[in-house]
Image 1: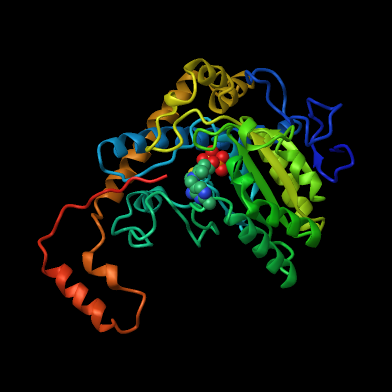
Image 2: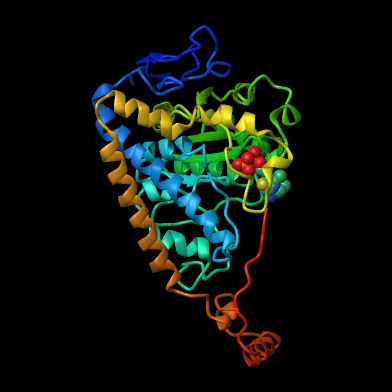
Length: 388
Ligand SMILES: Cc1ncc(C[n+]2csc(CCOP(=O)(O)OP(=O)(O)O)c2C)c(N)n1
């Protein structure tokens, strides 16, 4: 292990842009085509690489199925992570049981890596009777206390002061093992909350890792309209937070970078800011048509650096995967997803009457009247809203 450029960030010795400071360079472990470059710790590759591959593939298949279900009117809204899977999955493999995760919009899958079963996860996508939140959250804004992850943050960037605040609280309470990971998109960096969070984290040296998924779009807005800085990572340096740019399509690089940042946090050395350079292959959400603002050639160029294909190439190169095992895995994961969808959909929509629960110990008269009026209406089929 070597210290990178005196920033306090320690990484395995594989920084491709060794002559650049980490906030301007690009930390990679895998080749662009996944082929030959070796991880710094080959001993962990069989377990780590195969686990990462399984989850990236699960997420790829799951996102495709959810978009189909949305088009069939069975899911109200969905935001896929296609092409960006290496960042949440690498992070999910790096966090430990006691850490809290504050996602932006595309990191729910971390909960699956941390052991959340698929069916209750999908109940939150459907917002149905099996949903622990009783369908009151916007569909697809999953969360789970059991695996220490809060909901998507639809008001973008608001989650970062929360991530920093919880990390600070853990430090004040002497919970030395607890760190937090807060995510933000490139668009979110234009929000004041991003700057407040980084500044506070730097000043109070809180045990927080802030990850910016630079997927190069804030809906249709590109980075050159978002910032005049050379990179997003460089913004962290301005706040005295050790910062680095990582290949967000390289799951092993993401795993190493987040692991090292969490280790720093636990040693009391404060926050780290990671820009994960990636690309949103799919639409912003099921309410978006990206062909209105970008060319297919551009998408194809990025698809050539696909995180799933790159890891697959590396695992095949390392003798850990072949076509037959890969096909078997695909069948297994497809069956797992189908079974979870069937289980989740069996729950049906939330009870109408439950709309009035959980706010007042005793229902005020005007709500009691509204409840009676609603319950007297004929039962209408559930309608799914749009969003984002
Ligand atoms: C405070 C706020 N402003 C605007 C929006 C509308 N909005 C929803 S998602 C989004 C783009 C977010 O882009 P980015 O942070 O890059 O994340 P990405 O969607 O690319 O993952 C915007 C502007 C919002 N939800 N909240």
